[in-house]
Image 1 (cartoon, rainbow, N blue to C red):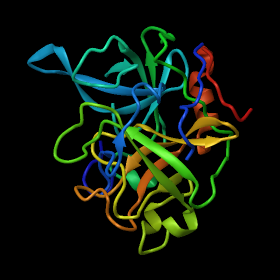
Image 2: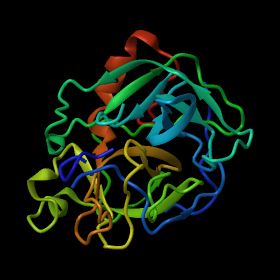
Image 3: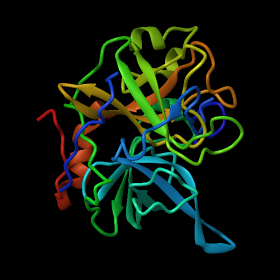
Length: 272
């Protein structure tokens, strides 16, 4: 979720269709419903209602990167719902796992989201498993940077109008080169080299509820998780020249491996 203006062994086959936070909690604006269970590494991070702890509600997104680790944004932090498509119905494709450890990047400053390092790992209390609707998201190689206008997809259950959608949404957002995104009439100095911008056409974007979720890009014949939804403008998420800003995953590959090194459980990076 963004805070005010400055926030902000399972195998996988790519979906069959074409390749393509003010900083606050992000949502998918201008998108469409995703084909059910086509983004199998997407998870919903959920909290229990204080007055009814047996019931949970969606807070934000994340990415399954191993059988026991979920990657999300540091400004979030839950029960993990895997294999879900429709948040309001139990379809039989989903299952739920608790979290027994939260590891936030040591450089994260919640009072200054534009400082970057908006990344966290959640250690699951039990191992995720392949039920036909859950896969591990592949990570890019360390330092990998995509060119301007490279087509990527953001997915999430974030706001599309005034309500959270029942079903997972997707929208294609082209990458905006850092040299452009850091210009004064775009995001200026708020856009760091450890971030990746995508969108900015004034029509499509992430928004509230999408934070922590993946920016997935098809490279070398496989979908890889290149970004974590971090911040954008709220409430006008689809503001022209204010693209959705993501934590650039390739800038944190070493950190991800260092944190998870004590419990190697099939963490995958397709770049090594």
